[in-house]
Image 1 (cartoon, rainbow, N blue to C red):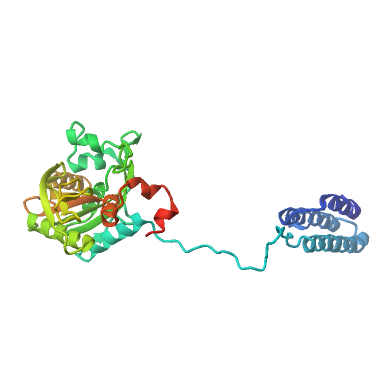
Image 2 (cartoon, rainbow, N blue to C red; image 1 turned 90 degrees about the horizontal axis):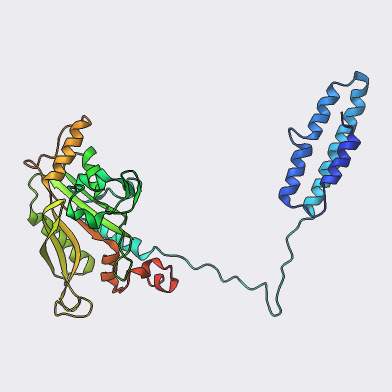
Length: 350
C-alpha cells in the first residue's frame, strides 16, 4: 500500500505551475475522485490491524485537507487574463455589438408564397418536418410522375445520382405522389423545398435552387379553377395591376399543361427586363395527368389501402414555381447568383 507521504509527493508532482482549469479538474479526479488514489488508500485502511486504523485515518484526513487546500489555492490564482491594450485604446467604451440578422430573401419570398396559397385554403404539406426527402428514389422522382426511363422529358430533370436508383430530387413534385399515397381527396397542398439539377450556373440558372409546388384534387375541378387560383396568386404577389395569361406548354405529369406569364413592369410594352416581349414567364401548371392518379391508386392498392383517385370521379390541378425566379421578379434582381454569395451588402437590403 502506498503511504500518505508517497501519495502527497505524487500529488505535488502533478500540481505543476500554470495548470489550466481543465487540468486542475483532472488532478482532482485522479487523487480525490471516486476511483482516485485517496479512495484506494482509505480502502486499504479498512484492512489494517484494528490498533492502526485510528492513526491511519487521521493521516488520510490530513492528506485530503492538504490536497484540497492546494487545489483551491491553484484555482484562486488563475484569475482573468490581463487585457492587452494598444496606445489610445479605452477599454471602458461600450462594444460595437452584433447587428440583428434577418431572414434570407429566398426564405422571405418562399414564406410569402406559402402564405398567399394558405389564404386560398392550401396547407403547406412540404414544410418541415414532412417536406419529403431531398435524396429521392427514381420511382418517385420520375415514374410516379409519368416520366418513364425512355421519356424525352426526363433529360432536363435527370439530376445527380447518389447511389443505385437514388437521386437528388430535381423538383418537389414527388411530394404530391407521397401525399396522395396516404391521404384521400380532397387535397389542397403546397410543397416548398430545395431541389437539384445539373444546370450550368449563370445569371438565370443554378444547380441548387428552391421550388414551391402545389396540388388540388377533388371532384369537379376544372381548368377554370386553376386559372382563377393562378390569377389570384399573381395579383397577390406582384400587385393588382399585373395581368396574367396562360400559354400552352407540355409537362409529363399534367394534361393539358400551360405556362403562366405575367405582364412586365413596362405594362406589356416591351423593355430590357422582359427582352422586349412585354410578358414574363413565372411558372408552369396544368391538370393532373390520369397516369399519375393511376400510379398512385396502383400503389395504394398494393399496400392494402383503397383506391381513391379514379380519374372518372376526381380531377385536379398542379403547378410548380422557382422561388429564386419569383424573388428576382419581385425585387428586380438581375443575377440569381447574388442569392448565394453571402454578400452582406446585398442581403441587408431585405
